[in-house]
Length: 312
Image (cartoon, rainbow, N blue to C red; front, side, top):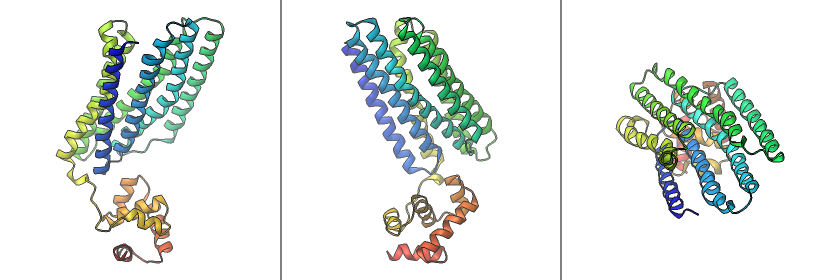
């Protein structure tokens, strides 16, 4: 086992863990829904990297003294652990891009993405099983790289291109600059990483630097957000309600998780329009939730809602 490479990977894992902690704090501090989606993407992406690190840098070296078949089996295990993680992770990135430009993900995009992704996963599984059964090992990597992996790259870049085009027309100047900068940074990092991976990974110095480039896809956008949000987005900071523990009190009153979320926003001074924009639900849905909340709590309006929680 290459202990230097192992230490290098552990250091990268620690760095990305710190980055996720920073992103969690930003998500808690700012009312920008895309941050939650990007956080889910960052966690999935780091999990993807950890699986590669564990299987490729820990398990595979242990199999070098075994047969080529054992080496191949471990590689196939790595692929099938990575494919489901990759599908979910990239979908969260797509959601983050759409939310950043103020749009929901269209239904046809969801269905197309998951259908194509699952079909390619099945095709990759069948092809690898065939190569393993017939002892033809030369094309296993190519099946994954040029099938499922190309699909992932297309989804990433198409969503970033779409988000960039929509961001250019945003009315809020700060949001427009944030969206354009964040999307361009992500696009550049993904482009460099995939070019290095697909075209130059046989060069030793490129191969050894792939790990840091992989994690830069998370680290640099978070560094960018940490610099930009405190400077330009004070109006999006989450404000704490004067009421104490809203969530616990609302739960004690029998409200659902969505109703508790709406109560917290109302007590923080949000209007129906603000709640609609923040939770990505319609005005009618907001009104229906408020009606159900008032009926369940046996009150008539916001004033009585404030009084109920303040008295508690």
